[in-house]
Image 1 (tube, rainbow, N blue to C red):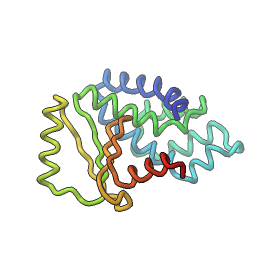
Image 2 (image 1 turned 90 degrees about the vertical axis):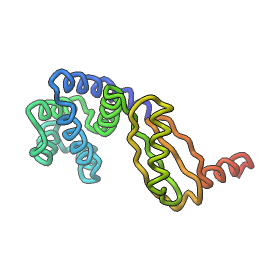
Image 3 (image 1 turned 120 degrees about the horizontal axis):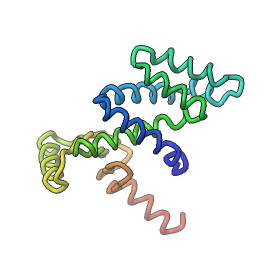
Length: 178
């Protein structure tokens, strides 16, 4: 994964700087999100991994699927990634681009996965405390995963705090050698 991030980082940085110069952060965000969803589809993954597909065919396929969302620069970007055999890192490029945007805008995105739904008043208090603590805007996304048994997992970029019961049980089993 670190190798793919290293491959994706220069592209994400270049796209971010280009979008910033052209006042098009939102447009590029939409383009990259659409392209990432296309790339993650299992039939597209199969096409990317199939040596019978040429670079041009792959680029044309992806461009045709995303045509309504791409501008001239988006088309060029897809062709560049296809030529350099970097289409598979497009979802990572998208994540890095979003992180650059959040940093530029002075916000941070945090995802909280809990075993049970978090009530709205607790969500509001949690957002307020995080904004005061971090001294920046906070965008919180909540998800429920009953397999956590209890507790929560908090993700902010690459930073993860696993306070779930499932995570604690897993670490205990590892310590016991099972």
